[in-house]
Length: 218
Image 1 (cartoon, rainbow, N blue to C red):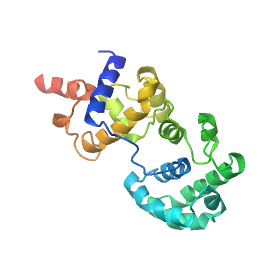
Image 2: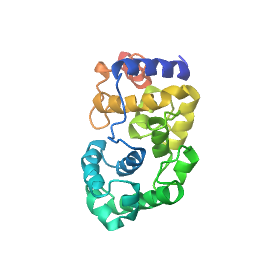
Image 3: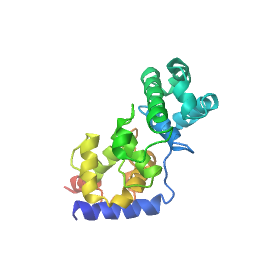
């Protein structure tokens, strides 16, 4: 089985397992997803979803957040960790949206990368979820799982993982595939506990599981 064949089979099985998988950060507007994805660094999506309503209650739009003092933003977002740097990035990002993009999130990957605090992972999330464009979001779940499954070989650097996945994942499947990896990484192929390989819908095609099974039969 080639990597591309394995990828297509994994995509199909995860689609059946998690048909409604979507972004686990809650948002109604593109700029709010930008804020949430910055806050989600080294923090759970669930915690971010609890914190952001307080932020938007005080600063309901891009312009209000752009005008806000960094200290005020930090006070609210501190429970997400790294409060100082996250508040600084959010403030700078909102000011740039206001001043250069008419308070709208740009529909261009390179323009997104210019925004303070926005890296490839965040830009891909925005492109895929907000604008419906081809995207591959290489978060920690994605990187861990595609290595275990054998879609990439021992690559941990997000940019390199993304580059390898573009070779084998159909562009239109990338965004949904990455969301399903998050669900699968939480429910079955966990990093915090022993993976539930016996419950996994991929056990017969997962490279790590095949390797373990062969080792047991030696």
